[in-house]
Image (cartoon, rainbow, N blue to C red; front, side):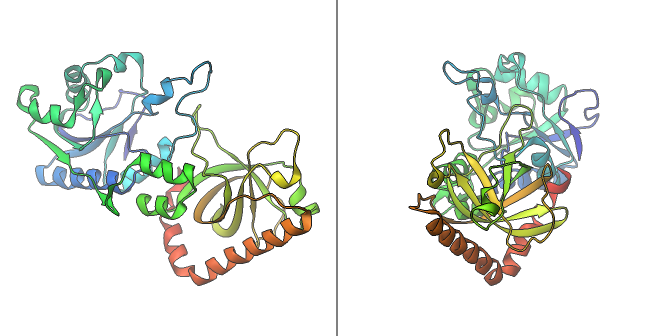
Length: 341
């Protein structure tokens, strides 16, 4: 797929069908929109392109009395991962400019003319039912349909929501599942693949091996630009960590280590890889695929109780991998894009 994310120097010189959306997560709902667009493009002999933004418009909003973006910590997929996933669905090109003050000020009509028609030669548009765009989000799917002929588009297609368990699939629903209670099972069902993030292995307190007998890799989320991928809710998870080309079972703890009562506790992500026999792998970049939530983080009366619980967590992880080996392998093959992304 052609990736013209930050430049307009090599845009299409032929007529296109443009699929519009943010596509954070490229979940089941997004897949429904994109697949319908790609299929229609083939019927109409048009080239399927995506228009999106390189980063979420909410990144431009700051929290009150803070320099922190209101969007930080809410991203489900980095831009390059989004593009890989869209390419696998049949999209042939993507135009993803940064959301700027200039773009923010465009009226819906100017948005269609200046960006979609002049830059992308769009003849047909495909959007989700809840798509909004233009200054003050004045444009909508309904607005596009009502103004199709005046704007000069051959066709406007509005795709109905994809539902799961009676509710529409959405990025917001996935974020809530991950952040509020760590419902990895639901999030993965809505994504149609395991929730996966990139992290670097950094120095930690070295308690896992020396005090507990369970050496851990301390993980720090990679931050593309000033964005940060969402960290699931505090708790203990069964996961798989990719080292090189190998996916290994892991028990991952996200929390504040309350048993150690640190003077200044901070959120830590620690992973124990029970089958790994190699050297420490500091400074390496790994992929973490979350598969199942095991329990909440707990405060224990002593280290012996903590060690006993960790042992149970590891046993549960290994049992899960043993019982669901084939299904897990299939799920992990869906993440092949992460190595190159």
